[in-house]
Image (cartoon, rainbow, N blue to C red; front, side, top):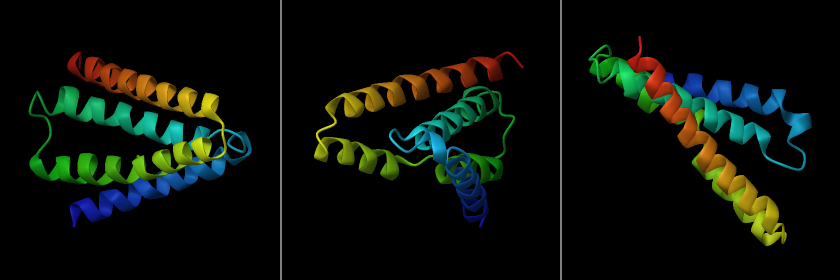
Length: 119
């Protein structure tokens, strides 16, 4: 039930990000990138500092990490958008989006981890 509730809340936030960035995402999937980066930052905070310091219960991890972050981030959309770039011959967009997503999201996990450990 906790994963279900958290996933629903994360999905609603992802939808809000998508609607809010719709005008910016007509030629490049900024909304997906932002949702994934935000989810990576949150999971970095949660798992990086809070979980290591045992500040989260197993139930909180289910709600926030598996549920909320799982609902917020969207690997299937990311993959489909990359497939669309390849299919459309937009290789520069494909490589740019892939590298930017990986680098930015990894950076946000690390940032969240470092910030949470300093609390």
